[in-house]
Image (cartoon, rainbow, N blue to C red; front, side, top):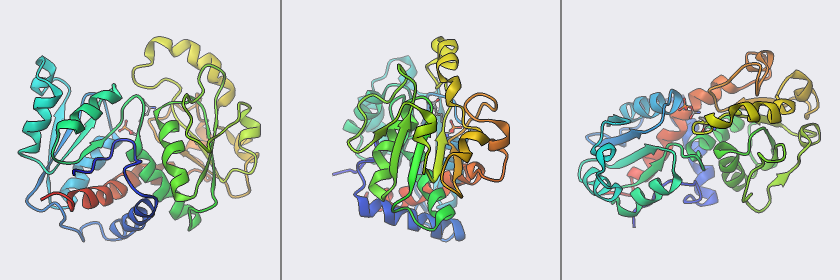
Length: 294
Ligand code: CP
Ligand code: NVA
């Protein structure tokens, strides 16, 4: 049975924690693993990417593998070839397939027919690879994960959903604070939903935000900016959190919208470490999943 990484729930809680510890080792010595020597990984990008593209492509190389990066329109998929046939053919050549696309169901369908692991590199519904890097960043910043309190402030989007789904499995309590109309639908059990951002961040160790206009949401941009304006992460909001609280953002950021420039570039953020940690965390994931395929 091929194991995929589509929502993040595919990892048991103890595997998730072990993966973060492994990522710390890989970060300390980036060329120590040859887990992908002589093997290739397909990386399909149907939506733009900076961090995911660079971190996966470089990470596969650091593990001794060959990344096959395929942009929008480069596959016959763009001319109507099915996800099923694409999955079957890719599985004959590569040891894993990463895909970034809009519809989450497309990733599930690809995984249904792939005989190698499929890794979700972002859909409109989930962004699980991001949360691996987020947990690594928290582990570095606080020396532990268990008992941390994370308040996500902003649009109840793919990143919010993956945080709420995955972070509690490593012992991190998640609160999501969004305005009416932009809240997280189908919140996982245990997620705290607190509409008032100032109440939501009280006692939080981590304030986390993301763009107000995700890829695919451009047609509602003006309404989103108006509704989400009170949800900006700035110094005043950070002051309401626990002493020593840090700010995270998956990026790309829009300084002055969801995050103020003084937080984005200031002393209380770990955002740029977080961006680097994509590579280390994903390498640990690739090591784990590729070890399970012949
Ligand atoms: N955080 C993140 O996934 O960034 P990119 O869209 O640049 O890959
Ligand atoms: N929520 C954002 C995340 C970008 C990494 C989006 O989907 O566009």
